[in-house]
Length: 178
Ligand SMILES: [Cu+2]
Image (cartoon, rainbow, N blue to C red; front, top):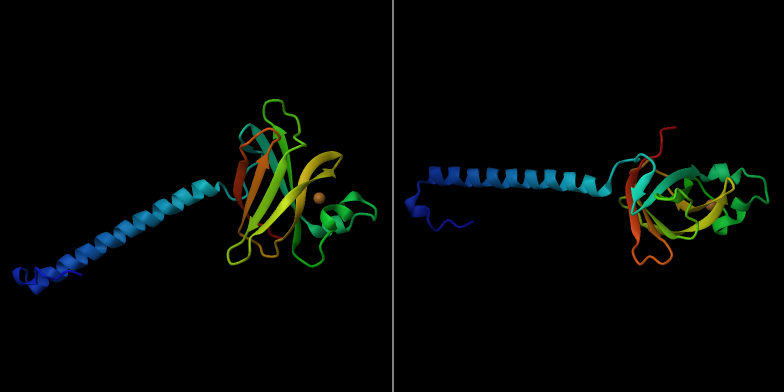
């Protein structure tokens, strides 16, 4: 702190000035944090957002399914061998997304889709969401380790054939309470 003007100002009023300056800084910091928070929330969209999520002329539905549900499938079911098989261990979930064209309401089956699951303090998991048949329709999915309740940030990148631009959905996700 610059105190070169010290002689002209009494120690008391100097202390006061320092206090006021500190308060101003604190207030600016608080406003900065509040703005950053608001901006951050807007960027990250909602927590467990309503579906469909709309992006660039598409509508996206997502689901996070415990791997146990898919392990229970009868042997020979497609899902057992999908994505290299159901990984062992607890806390493994299958992220599944279905994408529709907003204009035509038709299911998009030929997009290139990747998914990321981000958890504070953990390595980000990036996987291709592979085309898979689910309920007789083409959806996209893969397995992710999601053993904590949350929050997770889920990022889904969708690129349609012939489209140079990648559309991105980004949202926060908590597992439902059990
Ligand atoms: Cu699958």
